Image 1: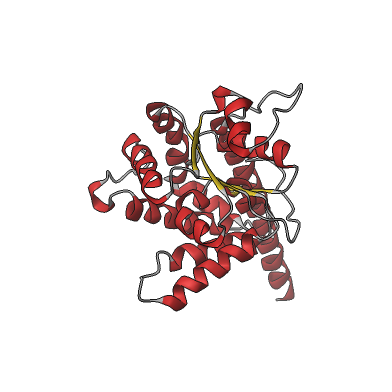
Image 2 (image 1 turned 135 degrees about the vertical axis):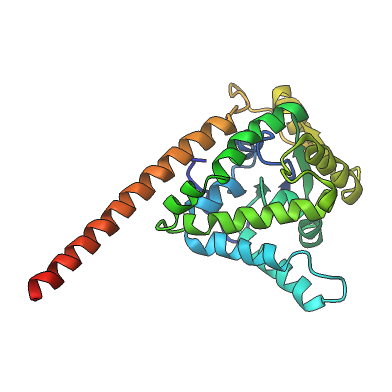
Length: 267
């Protein structure tokens, strides 16, 4: 959040799937991939809000089609084709929605490593509270409506929530799906759908060594593994968007008042 989005380089092969949930070290992991791969990295949290509207609208379409039933080959192919179109030119992908589309990504990309960043489930649940409290405010949705890209953000988040219900237990889960139950269910799901030789669990507190070993890379000299606090970035981002929304709504109001004044003057 607040980072500059990566620019894809067409033809760059995807080599790493970041399967960790949001707020589980994905921002730090994304920056680490920048350093190790020296190639564009698709961080869903950044690309979704900092790119043109086509980005978020395409992922909304993907999530609305997902999961395609086994007997609907046409829709399955649409989902795969749309994913491939958005990830062309990136060496790695991480954060939502990729973390929930691992089976589709493995169907598209065979020669990859799946890295799930991990943290204490209780700490993860606590960190997600900042997102839940913000997204349940109708005021915030009202503020974002005039803003390009952000006007689609709540639709996108709602589809992600639906995906979590489908993947991690449906109606048996609490209404608030950002709990340690969801976190543990995600780990168990990855262990079912990813082969042992492809799946790596990584805690950013461990530093470079285990990550570099998993990816077959040398440990960068004189560079510490990046540590980015997602919660602080989210808070900064929310404040920025509310400010933008207020400015845009003020401009709209001024325009309306001016138009009404012009009409009054005509009569």
